Image (cartoon, rainbow over all chains, first blue to last red; front, side, top):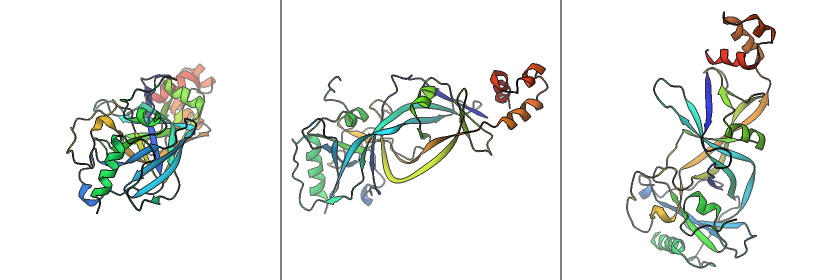
Length: 136
Length: 167
């Protein structure tokens, strides 16, 4: 059996995917379990004003994670399994490439009070504030 | 580098996140297990082979699959992770068929966010192995149409591969 690995994007146009990686799991509150779609997970923030600084924070509920963006030593290709028709065999298609990840590998810091964003507020930070107010 | 436009969303928005700015991360409308999406780790040389469609995955259903380039064979290993790996596709891929479910503060307009399609549980890695020449030989011997020259050539090369495809 042979599975062809197809790529319609070519070498220069392969769409780059983003990866946010953290230790452990993000748990969804039970009232949202059955309607995840478009649900807010957290706010990804690049707090430093310096373009050299690759520090990121990710605020999920009452927790703030600190991490860095790093290039992958070896890139990851995103492949999708396809079955074009019932008679045809399975094919694999390249649909993206991952060259970086934003890795949060430290313990989360608990945010005790409402966060005071160090950065200019935009729509997103208001949303986080709204979520904080709504959590009992 | 060209400056990113402010209305980016999806992976572009995360990858081009400017200093002193932020972006909400949400579950994508088609978020799910997406078992049809596979991550394959590659070095730069193999990457070029894959992007130029020079590789195939081969094996019988009961065997471990191998990935073959024109000259090399790689075993495919599945590596798990205990981290949560949030995969964020570029905007435009996985366009939503559903509209946002509701608009309270826990949900977002999909235009202004980066959305996670899947939480990956691991990826595939490649390890170079010796090609299964014995198998190739036995497959070639099964086939009555092989000319003597092909057998003398050791059963490798283009004809060998062609026979393999018919099995």
